[in-house]
Image (tube, rainbow, N blue to C red; front, side, top):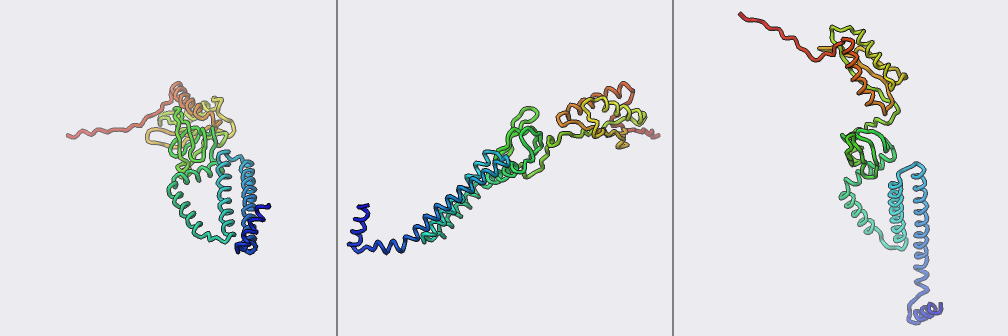
Length: 279
């Protein structure tokens, strides 16, 4: 304290107006300090609120941390600019340089930012989750993990595929696991010389005998087409999603066995050729 008083006394003796400077710049410095302190407090409060909201919505922890950090950095950047401005220092050049740098970084990371934006949409809207069997970006498999920039799948032959999120959101998403039940759509045919009612009764019996087929909704067996070489039936039973392929394969095997045993033919494409003898 004594040193400060001595410094002030020495400044006054040398003609340096400390009181005038304090009167002129003191309020400005206090305003700048208040702006910085209050701004930092508001930024921390908003960061905490955002984290609570994201956590309540069960948003991925990686995305939560990333979004809260980016938000806090953006808010603190605005606080620093406001603090500098309150000191009377022009901030136009600083803002212009910051904007140019941000634009350059945005162009350099255009693809990565697109994948990030798509990842945010996937995590928020949840078109699929880990464990779902989906068809995305031209590949099918079970979802292993959903990250901010890419999604990892495991195919039926145990291959690991990493798909950029931008490719996922840019195309169709087919989620085969979104509902508990699925309909198995199949088509079987019999010959024109066969008894259509007999063939239909056999198909209904095959569907009814399969324990994995659900009674509600009721399965459908109906003539769908009088094709070139066969009378075609649509067979559409409902099953649990996990039993889809089991029922699909079992039905095809059972139809072949039952049709053969009952003498019902399963025709293949045929063409009649008429020969004309020229004298």
